[in-house]
Image 1: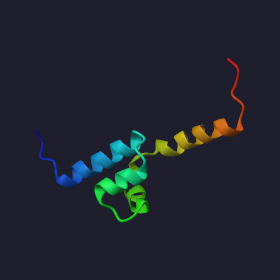
Image 2 (image 1 turned 45 degrees about the horizontal axis):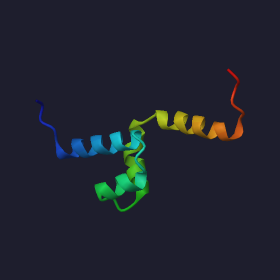
Image 3 (image 1 turned 180 degrees about the vertical axis):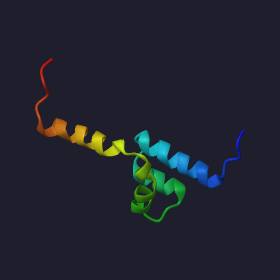
Length: 68
């Protein structure tokens, strides 16, 4: 097994948690960050599909669903 630094474990935890839908405030608190902004700025750069997912979620509020 390769040597894994504690920093790598923290980064993996944060990224996986955010991808899984854990609220950023919870992730931030568990990592001991002073602000949620720091957590989001640091760990969401690895998650490019966040923007597309947000657009899809919001579009359902404004656009009628297409009939199958």
